[in-house]
Image 1 (tube, one colour):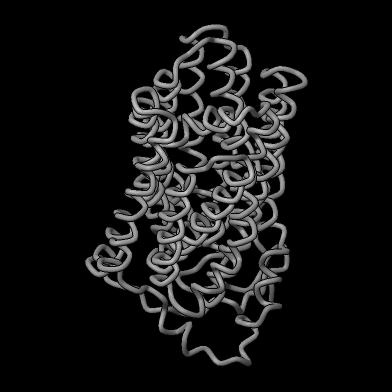
Image 2 (cartoon, rainbow, N blue to C red; image 1 turned 90 degrees about the vertical axis):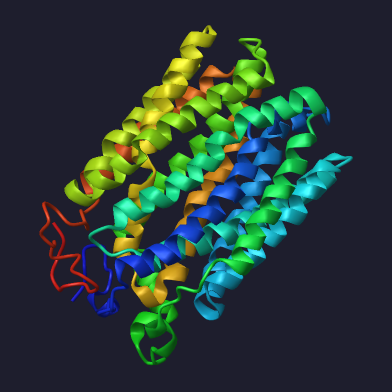
Length: 432
């Protein structure tokens, strides 16, 4: 029998759950690694557009510098997931943090646009390897009943790092030059690599190693059935728009709007991004809790609409106060939207195919990372900053409406297992 959208019901096998203390001993070091790594990433977010502009680039070319990073992530996600299945999660994290360390140091020394693009491409390969490996590891440790909360906690550490980074990143740029945050990023990535080497423990399920080849769940057609299913494509669209907006609007157009239209300093733009990340973090655990209690769908749809509202407010902002208010609303919407899509994918993914399914999901989402900065940067250059922001707000409305109308709910409701998601296995029948 199959689930709605054609996902084979036989994919999921019973899997012995780890005890809570064991899960915590494995989960908390992963959160520490992500915290340290993303703190470095957060340092460069408020200054990257200005750093790219220092090479004499237009707004559209700035989008290209940011978008090439997404291209590398898009290309590397599936191979990183396959590597995590074959070699384990820990080697993937070590490799990714090492690549990021080297790439960040090289970006600080870039002397031309081709060099900057090459180093950003390398940094994207490193980021994809770290993020895919980390998300697969959370999928290993979580259960259907706590998946939303564990994804929230993981993303919370992610966002603490990203949120703490922009303000010191802006201050570093103001006092020591635009290259300084990239040097600091290399240092933090190196620390994350040490955590991966000496603290992280392997979480790859033993059952995934022992599964026999004839099992259709581990064949390529098994993963294709999942990634071409309607539920996967719908949640992929939601995540595509989130990444499209985060990198194209919030990380590219919004800083340029603050700089050019409002005359803000790098530090003020950093404060704004820190505010958004702080609000995001404040609501994140509650988002996961609601996703576990009410279902992923009832959190994803309204959060997506709030994100669209935030970008419309940015488009209309004429002063720093409205700019800050827009960042607050963005943080609220993106915080509630954050963990539920990944939890939804984990609900779909069989344990033996978790690496490939999450790799495909991250590639679909990261395609927004490619298209967003390039398209929205070009639109900002030809039509001003309001046009790309309003266009992205409309995309949020569209993706939220489609998911709300057509996506099935896969999670637990009111403590009762749905027919689609029982502890460790799929039941036969059709999702409602």
